[in-house]
Amino acid sequence: MKALLRLAVFGVLALAACERREAVPIPQTTTPPPTTAQPVLEAPPSLASLNRGGRLFQEHCAQCHGPEAQGHPDWQTPGVIAAPPLDGTGNAWKRTRAELYAVIAYGAARGGTPVMPAWKDRLSESEINDLIAWFQALWPPEVYGQWQARNAAAAR
Image (cartoon, rainbow, N blue to C red; front, side, top):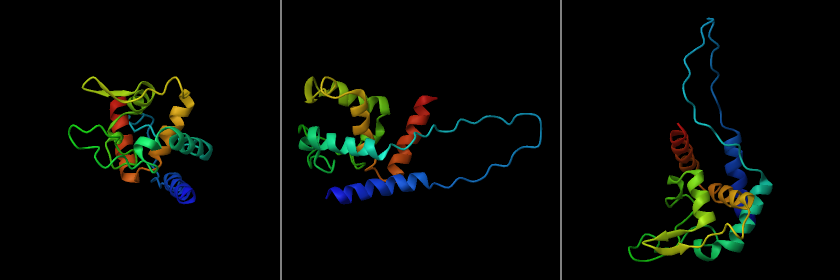
């Protein structure tokens, strides 16, 4: 199971690293071309970071979010408090990196009722970032691409 998960993570990283880019011709004028905002792409996480994130997830998060970050089956049922999936099939990708970090660090409440504990006193900043990197590595490329586009738009 762990070997399959590591293989999947490696595949996602390999695809991200091999993304082709078209060459942009260099203008022959002395006037600089107009700038267009390009999304800021994050550097891929290291394998060490992903391994730490996976270990931390199994230790602290899998009990509620499932061993493969699949979430609880009733996570969308009204009135039921259940952990959502973090594998790209839920709505975590709709949150910015800062929002993902804040939910893990400070917890979450729905209607005043705590639905997720705060982890800031038990996990360091780098451990929380490793967790985020790990579950984002599970996202399908199109979901991760949508997340990057949303984050780039939010940064403008």
